[in-house]
Length: 115
Image (cartoon, rainbow, N blue to C red; front, side):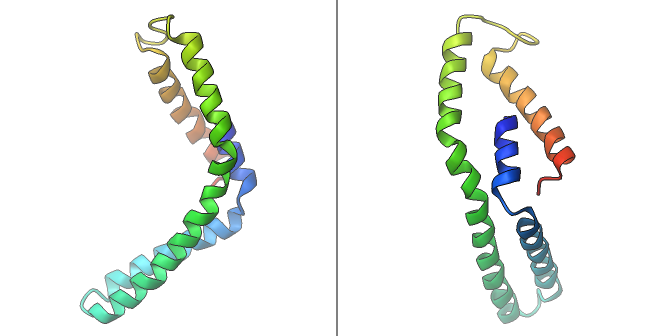
């Protein structure tokens, strides 16, 4: 949904998320370089898990704000379109929604540079 993408953009610190993702990429490279040193790999994996937990915590905030509205919207969509049958390319409402949601969310994420 477009609103979820917008919520994610404006309710998260995009610079922090980008830096955390960059650090995680660095940890992955460090793990690849030290694959013959198990103790070093374990140490790097521990650091990566801490950063990943921080990333997930920050990413969860928009989900908490959008969960109830999304449930209400899906309930309304189901009640409104359940009897309509095929809507787009002989797909019912949920598959039509999924297809368009993926397309528009992807485009909006690229336009807004959401990380």
